[in-house]
Amino acid sequence: MNIVGYITSLLIGLLLGIIGGGGSILSVPMLVYMFLLDATVATSYSLLIVGTTSAIGAITYYKQQLIDVKTAFMFGIPSMVAVLITRKFIVPLVPASLHFYYTTISKGTLLLVLFAFLMLASAYQLIMKPAANYQAQSTVRIAFVTLLSQGLAVGFVTGFVGAGGGFLIIPALTLVAKLPIKTAIGTSLLIISANTLVGFIGFSLTASIPPTHWMMLLTISAFAIIGMLVGSTIAKKISPTKLKPAFGWFIFFVAVYMLVKETIL
Image 1 (spheres, rainbow, N blue to C red):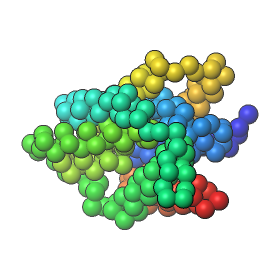
Image 2: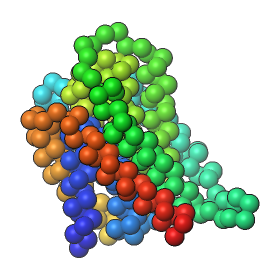
Image 3: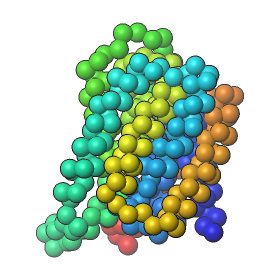
C-alpha cells in the first residue's frame, strides 16, 4: 500500500475543501511519481479523483447556501464544452514524441512540464496575490462575456492537463462575478466537479481501465473525500487567505522538482 500516496490524497481533499481548488495540482504528480502511472493516464485519472471529491465538497457548501448556481451555469457550461472538445480532438493530436532541434520530448514529458508551469502560475496566485484576488465583495451584475472566456480557458486547461482549474476559477468568481470568498469556493467546487467528471467520462468511454486501477482510484478518492470533509470543516473556522501562501510555497517546490526531474535529470 502506497502510504505516502494516500496521505497526499488527504492533502488533495484538504486543498479543495479549504481553498476551493488546487487538488489536481497534487493529484497528477502523485499518480506519476508515487503510483508510477504514465503522465497521459495520470491526467485522465486525476479528473475522476478531483471530480468526485469536488462533488462531495459542493454538496457540503450547497447545504450551507454557499453556491451561486446561476454563476456556476454561466461559467460551467462553456467550460464543459471546452473540456469535451479538448479531450476528444486536441489531446489525441499531440504526437507520442516531439522533436525540438536535437532533443526528443515524449508526450508524457510535455504534459508534465506544462503541468509544472501551471503549478508555478498557481503558486504565484497563492503566494503573491492572496489579498488582491480573494477579497470578499458583494454580488453585482455579472460580466457575461468575461465569464464566458474564462470558462473556455479553464475548460481547455482541465481537458489538456487534467487540472480542475480552481486557481483560475476563484479569481474570476471574486473579481468578475463579485462573489464573496466562501461562495466563490463553493461555486468553484461545483464547476470543477462538473468539468472533471465530464472529462473523465469522455476518457472512460474510449479507454480500457484495468480493475486494479479502478480499485486504486476508488481508494484514493475515498481518502481525498475524507480530506475534503476535514478541509470544509476547517474552512468554517479559519480564513482561507491565511493558508493560501503556505500551500503556494508547497506547490512551488513540487513544481520545481518536476521541472528538474523531467528536463535536467
